[in-house]
Length: 524
Image 1 (cartoon, rainbow, N blue to C red):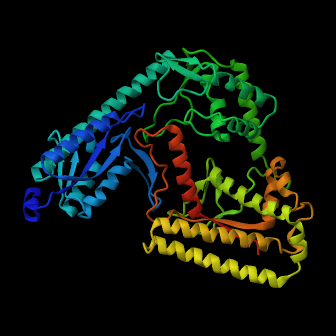
Image 2 (tube, one colour; image 1 turned 30 degrees about the horizontal axis):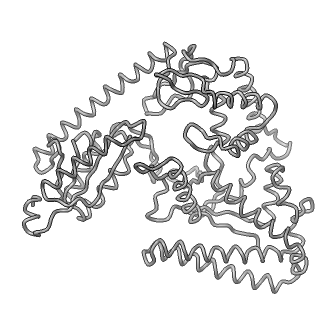
Image 3 (cartoon, rainbow, N blue to C red; image 1 turned 90 degrees about the horizontal axis):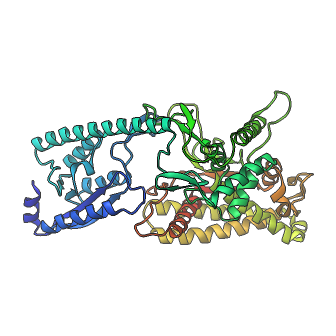
């Protein structure tokens, strides 16, 4: 049944979804997708259709593939377009009857995506239209023509990628800037890198502080407190600071790391030439700092058998566990990850900076409570009846919290109710848990750590000391999977949204996701 017949039978305007996409928008203005949306809306109005949803993918390629791991554990190459996938849902479910795109190559450039669109059309029975008339899937001839055009477009993209890669190699040979994101410490003027008068001296400061013995932790903490942001507008981490220091651009060297056949960037440099831009530090200083970082890494990783335990780098490693399989999660780069050797095993992960901050705040809040009221601990530590009553209260509230989560995931309560009730119960659990901690007997406290002074001593202590102090009151931190229907990806920046407002909204979104995933198991 065609869409005209559907409209005649229902006497109601057909519901249409609009999909717009542009491959490259480095400035983030979204003007291209805005123009496409306006033309698609005008096309829908001319046919009497009601636009119910618009799926926008700005600065998103429909050709470039990335290596991903499927839930089965299989590694595959796929074009990643979340909004395109999200658009297929209302079309397949029958919520919308028409899909509108500006042009065929705006909708699909990968044959696999086209076949997915064709399969969805067979299941949902919707119509596919484009403003330019290049995309129709009504008949077998339309489908065959679409496959031919997508194959041609895919070949055109491959040719362009090859020419761009060759041009990038030529730029590397000439030592010129390749474009893209400007390295920290520089700014671009007429396509040429020059030293930025604000961030350039900060790079010199970081090099000097490393040579003076400061750790990356001390530098990045100081910079974050001073409000210094990375080129992405984010707070500094040890990893981003290390990458900045190791960047050959700082010593005036142009590095070339080509894209490998699997789409990833080469791990090591294939070419280094004198750059056309000025150096921030001389080559000797750059090499000295690089050697210092290598020596520190070697010292951290060195462990001689029989010489005792290795040096602890992270205070909460060993306490963070996967709730699904019970495995201790390993600190890997910016995340804690559950890694199993079996094929198709659990690969749950969570941002290390976010969960570490959450654990530290909870632990310090508990120790501060002990510090403020040490007499309560002394008076109640020998009262087992009080501990039993508080433990029962904790168990009951935890059951209520689990039931509340189940009700939300099953759709029995809306998100607003879930957030409000969860916050109330979690607050009560935290209050009861602190009272319970104050009743713990003496043998729970290590002989070398005074629980009444942990909060005051925390800042200057080593990760091993912080781990030992945390272990006195915290048994484990369970990391749950993302709630059903919740997307863990960072939300996209909205049109006309300021950078500051975007960061506030992103932080709030991450905090909400984090609160639903992390569960503290305190010592009983």
